[in-house]
Image (cartoon, rainbow, N blue to C red; front, side, top):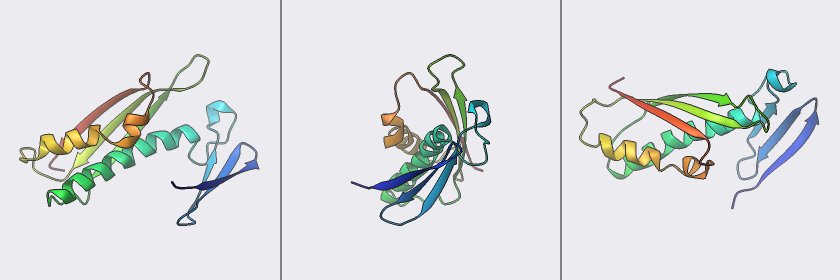
Length: 136
């Protein structure tokens, strides 16, 4: 179990403190939902959580097989529904892995990525579109 403490700071902003490390993040409502959009929104963090989870899961799988994947990057694009209730409709994830396109463990690493805990936790109605670019 990990605990975080969250405070509503007013003006549609929150601050959260990660219990074990005391690291802090702040959120803001997006501009299309009455906020200033000056920080990650809560739904931005969901997309970010997916991308960081995928990279971390690939890193764990790579470590187990002694495959160095330092330098991987990802881009995530979040699409919200236009109808009520407001929710995430789609997350587009682009992962770039600095290994040869014909790497013998490519299928293994991509399968590991699809099994990341955040992805498994998303509601089935959230469409996840992913792509992998190798050799970058």
